[in-house]
Image (tube, rainbow, N blue to C red; front, side, top):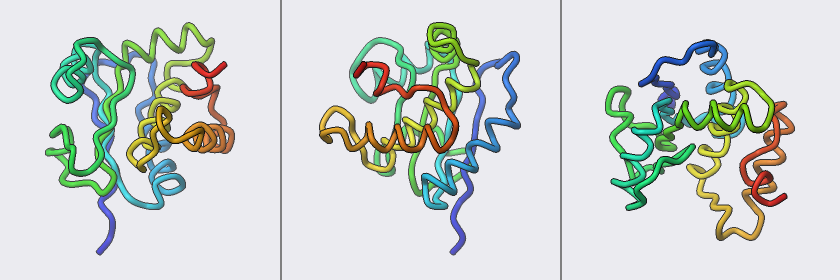
Amino acid sequence: MPSQQSALLFQVATPGLSRRGLRTFLKRLEQEVGQGRGFCCLIASDAELQRLNRKFRHKNYPTDVLSFPVGQSSGLSRQVGDLPHGEIAISYDAAQRQSAEYGHSVEQEIKVLMLHGLLHLLGMDHETDGGRMLGAERKWRIRLSLPTGLIERVSA
């Protein structure tokens, strides 16, 4: 049975962002990092990420990226069917702030967040894995020509 293709959903306006470029990157992540298995990625607002964070993690604040592995579905991908790796939600607002702080484009920041979220979907957890996710994130961001990753930012 062929794998379900990944989906990129936009819940907010994204001025200046190349949606085509992000969809191309999503397919590259699916093939290279996700080993051909699909996932859903939602680009939303701080308010939506706060709602999801409160509902699923019981933390009442917005965050930049959330991951929902298969079996912990947030319901984001109902529109596209079940996807083998699960779902990622990214705050466009946070991506704008972080891209300004770290001196790169919002599109680059969203790509960093997509990679980070997918690594979580693959079962990695930088809080408990003794550096395994840090190494994977570093390897992939270099291979994908991305700026410094989330884990490296807080580890520095």
